[in-house]
Length: 543
Ligand code: BGC
Image (cartoon, rainbow, N blue to C red; front, top):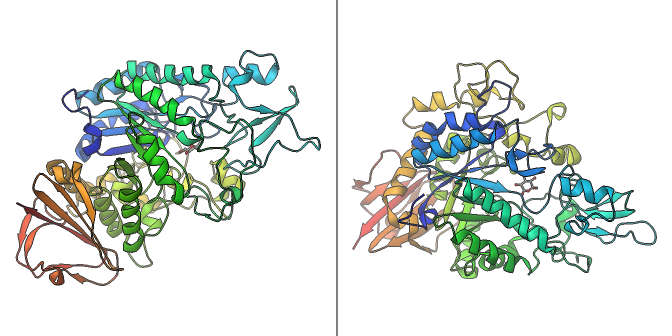
């Protein structure tokens, strides 16, 4: 772990791995920890600093590991506890850090605390969950909704009470008002820090606390919740009582104090919220010694347009000027960016080059979801093959998250695309992904993969791009531009988000030192400077 620079994460790049779909070392059709270990040379070749590994803990897998039965054990489907230690050690030897995904807000129904509390009203673990009596007519205690559909309350006939679940019925919510829950959360974090992890992605961090009075959420007039679609009434409410409670701040300070015992570690909180509230939450959650980073949803939704991105960046600087955000264009919960962002007729490769270079030049820490470096498109998974309960519930209005969770295509000529061999992959790998496999892209210097590597390498060399300040320039509907600057060096980043070429000559840029990802270094361009449709250029100047 870097003792010299405990804030390495500010300039670092995060790569997100969904282990079930990354690499299958045992040929069973799903990925595992040894599979990740086998691919460490690939991760090193990307130039990323840290890998966020989605949950691999013991789980009944109803929400694919986000329903944890035992936070301190590796689920046998992903390997053994020893294999995790090997992964950490080998990653460290290659200068790659590992972050684990702590799901602390809820547990699996099979978690021993819930097993006890749900069968025994006098259980010592009763208060670790949120129980409430029915209204006199038998209906749930309030209007809170589950993101995954229906009421957030499920009936328990032994206790004759409802329990709270913000996600699946099989993910009972933990009651963070109970000191044992908070102590257990900190103890789990310490357990993994002792095992050598470099930090945590904290799942649904703004859900930890609920309103003790169980007040009804009011209606909202801002239905832009990034996690939900119009098909889901969850977005109709202003979630001021079931989440976003003020008590979370003091818990995050306690967590921050624990993290400081392990210098050089990082915390990344996931805050799913409407845009109007997200930046004030990010500001508060990273204020003082709480979290290092918060994950913003702003680029996971919205439009791929200069005005939207400009407005988002300005909002971040205005509303949370001291926070260091974590930006992502994709993750395991949203449609692949090459599909979501591409206007009709624009190739996925073009969008991958553009969105990845944008992400890697923003003020904040970029997070790249596996396969985004390849420009993979969303896969259309037939209903009969759907795995995600969220998709099954809302299909066909919303088809769920399987389309972005399909296995990584490693080798186009091998069965199972080199992800697995003889076994049937747990989700289909379409022909289009085979053609974009790593093995194919390695051979092409202009592939999204090689472009990605050059951009990451340039970012690593330019402190202005890693840790520089950012000022957002006025632009047009076509052109997004901002300047990153640090110690006398400025890098002005221009992105043409339109189908027409843009000339930079009106900005006085006839000739300049530029980088556009085609070569691996800055080059002097004699001009006139023109940016092709859906392309980008960075211009460097030093005092
Ligand atoms: C994770 C999801 C998960 C949910 C419940 C999230 O925000 O990213 O994949 O289903 O939390 O844990």
